[in-house]
Length: 238
Image (cartoon, rainbow, N blue to C red):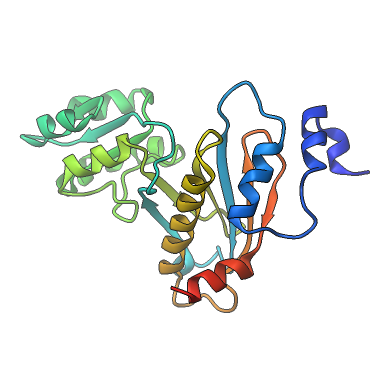
């Protein structure tokens, strides 16, 4: 029995539009927009299956990127900082900034924020928050760019929608690239920017094909397969 038979009518109708052959991003976005929309502005996502061994620490792919066209939302950012960096973080848009009091607040269960940034000198103090922020994916990390001496820039970028990504246990990267209301050109620009940054982060120990499979979908839609050969040709043409 087809999986779509267990889905709602909207999904089943949308599934009929999914092509049998992979498309380029430019071809896929119009198809995605032909599918019946929800009553809200759906988020557009890509799932990229990487040719890595996710069990190997040296093949983990993790980072952050400010997509050229934004992602259509802002984030609530807090900053673990002290001294003059407190005012710097707040002026940049942080909803909370501080040291011991903020640490105690978060340790007490407060989690109404999306991203936490910190200066390097604060890391020993917030180490105890690892058990709280780690499972939520909010623990500041140098790899994600959330541990930095340039607090103002980091806060501004994340408030504006800078996204973090990391591979899951299956070697997949799941990432937002915008909203369904975005133009096809803006969505394509974001998608290609994400692919480009992932290529630059290919682990030296990863063997064989690196970008193995790409799927595009919105919040409520089935996935549309993307032609990885097209991505390779586009990269070679640069």
